[in-house]
Length: 511
Image (cartoon, rainbow, N blue to C red):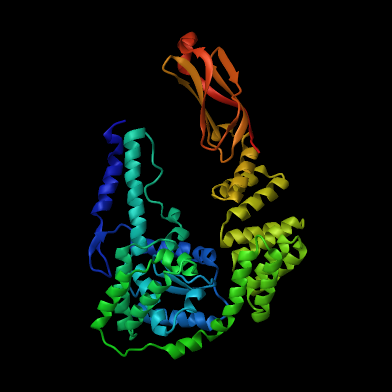
């Protein structure tokens, strides 16, 4: 290995470092190698799945969604990047939150809308998120992550004679990582500062941004609040932000539009339904241990708001836990009638249909769930269906995807994958390497590369005219290695020692 092997990667990194541009919002010079077209592509690729993973669209009040988009549109027109394809969506989740993807794809939860007091406060939230998109905060996080990957790749090449598959993989960033991004102090202060500029240009009272931050700081002290799992997790409030906003607004015109009354009118339906969603959320918490009480909460929510698909979904989940699977399927039918755009309804109905023996219906639902949002649960269930249909290749494909999840379902999928594929492809799961100790004795290093624990291993050291099999005791956990002594000195093998290899002769998944 020489430095020459790393030179192409070093040149790429230097090219990245030389790709400076002026930020369209701050007017500062900064590293930039994600183009505007790439920003837009990232946003387009991740927007729908990010909505699904956040709770899906809020559909009961299209006029409210249109109002949010209208307010957002006023701010976009006066922003520094009005030509970005901005979109706004209301997410059907009670957790107070808002997020922005690169390229101008924004969302606000209904749970945050119910906490705001005026259109000016809504403008403060949306203006803040518009700045995150316009100032390339998400794109800069992608760039910084890619640079770290590039640096790691160069170190790897210099030190371990390995190849890096690719320096830039925007798809691997994932919408979940971007919407769950915890913005740093600099980005939050920038979003506050320029967000107030956008409010002022659009005719909104900038003092609403100050009052909003004061409220956020006050609420952040409540450790039991669901704000901690929402907006505060990604947009941490601070007294510094309050002071900066207050100083910024102090010299700006007063008496601009606040819109308390119009805002109350626009969210009146949402406020009326708020107790129903509170009952639903409480039922979700009760579901695992007290499904009867969860069912009662679902019924309470439905009496208050019978149009909401989520409430039928909760009722179906409770019935399924109570063993009333046929009734659960009918509730999922009702949920899908009311919202055919949300993955969870198809996933849950698919699982219910699988339990009821409706394999074709289950497969159709699970595939539709994956089209909306791929999940380990759906892939695992589809793997089971494929295995039952004597299609091992398809089952292996689904199990492998599901096994990538760090969850109980992922672990079950990993065990199923290894059971099915290990006899066909042993080298992919167990590495057996002949090694020599300091005394010149032959040993076999066995490494479990499978996503499941293995036992009853049988391995062999093989060379021309030589073969010895060994059965190491115990269980080998995922990622674990063990060294097996063979009792053979390398000198005994003569010239064949250079042609030694290790073989896996047998292994089973440990229960």
